[in-house]
Image (cartoon, rainbow, N blue to C red; front, side, top):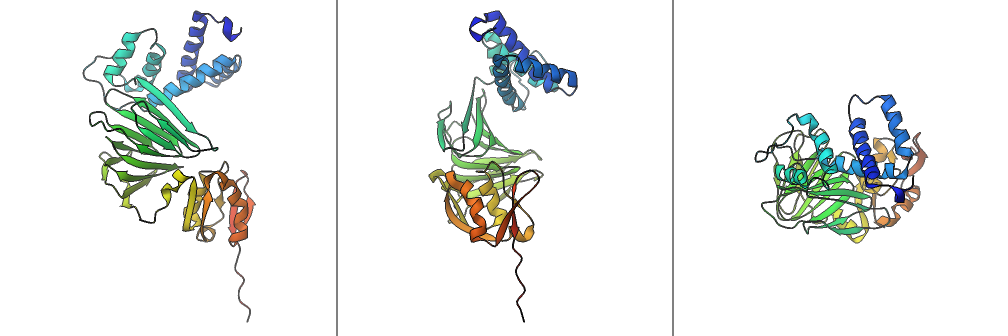
Length: 332
């Protein structure tokens, strides 16, 4: 069947099937036979793949729903483990059941709007969110924005973003990044993620940094920064140095100010398809400096042996590996 010949009922059946497979593939009791059946369904028509990808976006929103239970509206379920199932089902019915959409919005577990933004490795990107907030996206950055009744929520899935948040004290702005979150009402700040590391720099206003590991949050004031990673109970707070160059990416630059390779590689690797690895701690202690165009960082790696006492090898996964050149013992 062609996409143009689909009736409304046929299109709805594909949407329903996409929702079914989204829920089944995320279920703990999903069987190999079901996964094989899904693959056959997914690959049998381009619209199947399109609808399933759209359903995954809805699932991603549902995965970060506010964690409080609604008190002003009675919702048709109780068990917390079924929250995402009903969120997907409610999203499917939005067009056909305005009452379900209104109930989900009033309950605080269904957003009124959802947006996804991405900056490729080709250039920086500036976007305006649904609430009017301005966001600058570094290369290779991906985020989603959802507007709930009681909060605005961004999930920074990867990369780095600079936020200028529209002030709304009754509608907090929350950024999920790594194993924690940043809560603000209106401010300017930068969030950088790499693997399980997160760094938040505050330029204006105030934010609260919270870890998934413990209850409570830590306040951050202008001129301060917080960093955390997987396993941290609380974020590490310290002042932003007057010479800090972390925000040079907004001008398309990567500035390495005499950094140890162990500290420089996370800043370099965010721009690479294949991250560079270190052979050992001695290699990681070698220092590097310079100013580079973020669109040309790929050219930096092959040139490192020309400026540093290192040579390049490759590991079994195809990643380039930096190795220090042993110093020769003096003769005599």
